[in-house]
Image (cartoon, rainbow, N blue to C red):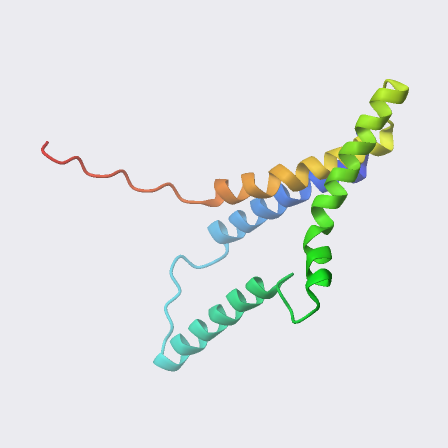
Length: 132
């Protein structure tokens, strides 16, 4: 496998593992602000972080067709790579190494992000049984 494809597939996993190791061994268990002002500053920073995350690739004021093109770039690239692979299978009987690497990156994009998101979630507490 091409090293670039391997890196594209494993970098999100390596990032998630490094975050969990830092949180486990380096970060303090509970951070408690010393003063009310520190608590307000911390809450303000978290709010700014979530606003920044929400605005990434968001809906800036633009023409509607420009916003549509921006939002369809990723699905268009995925569709193009899948069509290229299908075209090569039909015409040549095999997929080139370049398209195989592109398919690996597309697969990582489609499935790795959601998989890592769900792996990072804490399991919900089991519901108490009624009438036991």
